Length: 113
Image 1 (tube, rainbow, N blue to C red):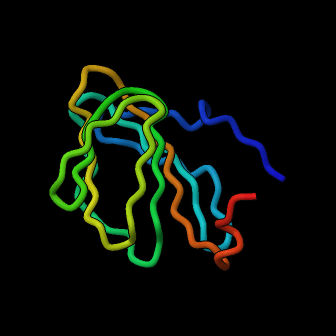
Image 2: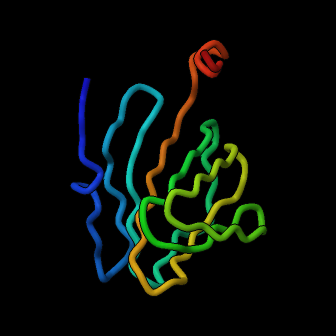
Protein backbone atom coordinates (compact mmCIF):
# COMPACT_ATOMS: atom_id res chain seq x y z
CA UNK A 1 0.00 0.00 0.00
CA UNK A 2 1.17 3.47 -0.81
CA UNK A 3 -0.43 6.77 0.04
CA UNK A 4 0.36 10.08 -1.61
CA UNK A 5 -0.98 13.62 -1.40
CA UNK A 6 -2.05 15.04 -4.75
CA UNK A 7 -1.15 18.52 -3.55
CA UNK A 8 2.52 17.47 -3.33
CA UNK A 9 2.56 16.99 -7.12
CA UNK A 10 0.89 20.27 -8.08
CA UNK A 11 4.03 22.06 -9.22
CA UNK A 12 3.80 24.80 -11.83
CA UNK A 13 6.40 26.34 -14.15
CA UNK A 14 6.34 29.60 -16.08
CA UNK A 15 8.17 27.87 -18.97
CA UNK A 16 5.73 25.06 -19.78
CA UNK A 17 3.21 22.67 -18.27
CA UNK A 18 4.62 20.14 -15.79
CA UNK A 19 4.11 16.39 -15.48
CA UNK A 20 4.67 14.80 -12.07
CA UNK A 21 4.53 11.00 -11.77
CA UNK A 22 2.70 9.78 -8.66
CA UNK A 23 2.67 6.02 -9.25
CA UNK A 24 4.24 3.76 -11.88
CA UNK A 25 3.26 0.12 -11.35
CA UNK A 26 3.39 -2.69 -13.94
CA UNK A 27 1.33 -1.53 -16.91
CA UNK A 28 -0.28 1.47 -15.16
CA UNK A 29 0.84 4.94 -14.25
CA UNK A 30 -0.80 7.86 -12.48
CA UNK A 31 0.42 11.43 -12.74
CA UNK A 32 -0.60 15.07 -12.56
CA UNK A 33 -0.35 17.58 -15.39
CA UNK A 34 -0.17 21.20 -14.23
CA UNK A 35 -0.88 24.19 -16.47
CA UNK A 36 -0.66 27.92 -15.99
CA UNK A 37 -2.95 30.09 -18.15
CA UNK A 38 -2.27 29.72 -21.91
CA UNK A 39 -0.17 26.56 -21.49
CA UNK A 40 -1.03 23.61 -23.73
CA UNK A 41 -0.55 19.88 -24.08
CA UNK A 42 0.13 19.00 -27.74
CA UNK A 43 -2.07 16.54 -29.61
CA UNK A 44 -1.06 12.90 -29.12
CA UNK A 45 -2.36 9.33 -28.63
CA UNK A 46 -1.65 6.60 -26.06
CA UNK A 47 -1.33 3.37 -28.10
CA UNK A 48 -2.37 0.31 -26.10
CA UNK A 49 -3.63 2.23 -23.07
CA UNK A 50 -6.91 3.82 -22.05
CA UNK A 51 -6.63 7.30 -20.54
CA UNK A 52 -8.70 8.54 -17.62
CA UNK A 53 -8.45 12.21 -16.64
CA UNK A 54 -9.97 14.13 -13.74
CA UNK A 55 -9.88 17.91 -13.60
CA UNK A 56 -8.62 18.60 -10.08
CA UNK A 57 -8.71 22.39 -10.32
CA UNK A 58 -9.35 25.07 -12.91
CA UNK A 59 -11.07 25.04 -16.29
CA UNK A 60 -9.89 24.38 -19.82
CA UNK A 61 -10.64 22.67 -23.09
CA UNK A 62 -9.66 19.26 -24.43
CA UNK A 63 -9.64 18.61 -28.15
CA UNK A 64 -10.38 14.94 -28.73
CA UNK A 65 -10.38 13.77 -32.34
CA UNK A 66 -11.14 17.35 -33.40
CA UNK A 67 -14.06 17.86 -30.98
CA UNK A 68 -13.70 20.49 -28.25
CA UNK A 69 -14.72 19.42 -24.74
CA UNK A 70 -14.82 22.09 -22.02
CA UNK A 71 -13.97 20.88 -18.51
CA UNK A 72 -14.04 22.26 -14.99
CA UNK A 73 -13.17 20.97 -11.51
CA UNK A 74 -14.34 17.38 -10.89
CA UNK A 75 -15.08 16.63 -14.57
CA UNK A 76 -13.92 13.23 -15.80
CA UNK A 77 -12.77 12.39 -19.33
CA UNK A 78 -11.97 9.02 -20.90
CA UNK A 79 -10.06 8.54 -24.15
CA UNK A 80 -9.34 5.31 -25.96
CA UNK A 81 -5.83 4.48 -27.04
CA UNK A 82 -6.25 5.78 -30.61
CA UNK A 83 -8.08 9.05 -29.94
CA UNK A 84 -6.05 12.23 -30.59
CA UNK A 85 -5.97 14.24 -27.37
CA UNK A 86 -4.75 17.75 -26.57
CA UNK A 87 -5.47 20.25 -23.78
CA UNK A 88 -5.44 24.03 -23.50
CA UNK A 89 -5.70 26.08 -20.32
CA UNK A 90 -7.69 28.88 -21.91
CA UNK A 91 -8.76 30.30 -18.55
CA UNK A 92 -7.19 32.75 -16.13
CA UNK A 93 -6.44 30.25 -13.32
CA UNK A 94 -4.05 27.35 -13.04
CA UNK A 95 -5.23 23.85 -13.96
CA UNK A 96 -4.26 20.43 -12.58
CA UNK A 97 -5.31 17.20 -14.30
CA UNK A 98 -5.02 13.82 -12.59
CA UNK A 99 -4.27 11.23 -15.29
CA UNK A 100 -4.27 7.43 -15.22
CA UNK A 101 -2.92 5.36 -18.11
CA UNK A 102 -3.91 1.78 -17.62
CA UNK A 103 -4.70 -1.71 -18.81
CA UNK A 104 -6.89 -4.17 -16.91
CA UNK A 105 -5.75 -7.78 -16.46
CA UNK A 106 -9.18 -9.15 -17.48
CA UNK A 107 -12.85 -8.14 -17.60
CA UNK A 108 -13.60 -9.31 -14.04
CA UNK A 109 -11.66 -6.29 -12.75
CA UNK A 110 -14.08 -3.96 -14.54
CA UNK A 111 -17.33 -5.29 -13.08
CA UNK A 112 -19.47 -3.57 -10.45
CA UNK A 113 -19.84 -5.44 -7.18
